[in-house]
Image 1 (cartoon, rainbow over the protein chains, first blue to last red):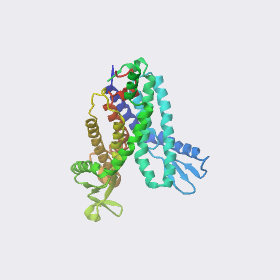
Image 2: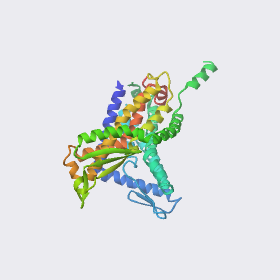
Image 3: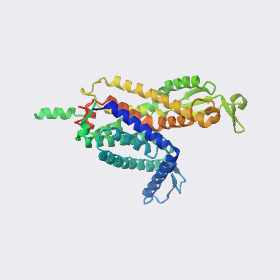
Image 4: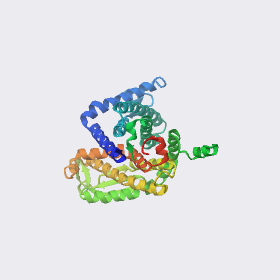
Length: 170
Length: 215
C-alpha cells in the first residue's frame, strides 16, 4: 500500500536530487542557461508582432526605445516549478507513460504561464518599477506554483480510475 | 433522492477546481494586504531568533541583525580598506548587508489564502480552522527563519569571501544550495505542502483530487 508518508518521502527525495542537479555548474551552463536564453528569444518573438522595438540577446529582453531590459534568471525560467511537478508526478503511483505525458504537458503549462510572466513583467517594469518589483518577487512565484498545483490535481483526476491510483491511501 | 435533498447536497458541495483557484486568487488580495501592513511585526521575531543564532554560531563575524520595516540589516565585525577585507576597527566602519525579509515571508499570505479558500467541513478530522491555521504558521515560520539564515550566510560568503569561508565550518557549496533552496523552493512550495497535508481529509481535496483515492 502506498501511503501519504511514502509519497512525501519520494517527492522530497526527487525534489532535492533534481534541484541539486540543476545547481551543478556543468548542467547549469549546458542546459539551464541555453534553455533560459531560448525563453528570452521566444518571449521576444511573441512580442515582436505587436511591438517591434523589442530585442532579445542571451537571457535579456530589451526595449530599444526606452532602454528598459529584463534578464531572465534562475527562479524565473520555470525550471524549479517543473522540478516540483516532476517530483510530485514521480512520487504518485501511475504507469510511466501517464507520468511522462503529465510531465510533458505540465512542462508546457508551466512554460505558458512563465512566458506570460516574462512578458507581463517586461511591460510592468516600463510602466512602474515598484509594481514590477512587487509582482515579480511575490505574486508571480505564487501564481506559478498554483499552476503546478492545478496541473497536478488535473493529472490525479485523470488517473483516478486507474487501479494503481486506488492503492494510494491516507 | 428528492429535489430538496439534491439542492441541499449541491449547497454543501465543495467548490470545483476552477472555483477553488478563483477563491485562492480572491483571498490572496486581503492576505497580501495584511501581510504588507504587518510586515515588521511578522518579521520581528524571526529576525530576533536569526540574530541569536548567527551571533552565537559566528561570534567573530556577525555583530548584529536588525530590522527596519520589512528590511533587515546584518552588520559584521569587518570593513573594507583598499579592496581588502579588514577588521571594522582598522576600516573605520562596519560592512553590513541588507535583506528584504518579504522575499521569504510571502509564503505566509500564500498559505493563508489557500487555507481560507478551503471550506471547513465535517469530513476533515481537524474542524477547528483557526487552530489548524495557527499550526500551519508554526510550521512555516521556522522555514522563514531558516531562509533568513541561508540568505545571510550567502551575503557573508559573497561579501567577505575567504575571510568568512576559511574561518567557518560552512562549505561554499552547502551555503549556495541552502540559499537557492530557501529562496526559490521553500517560499512558494512549503505553503502548498502544509495546506495539502492539513486538508488531505477535507471534502474539497477529496473532490479535487480523486474520488476513488484516499477513501
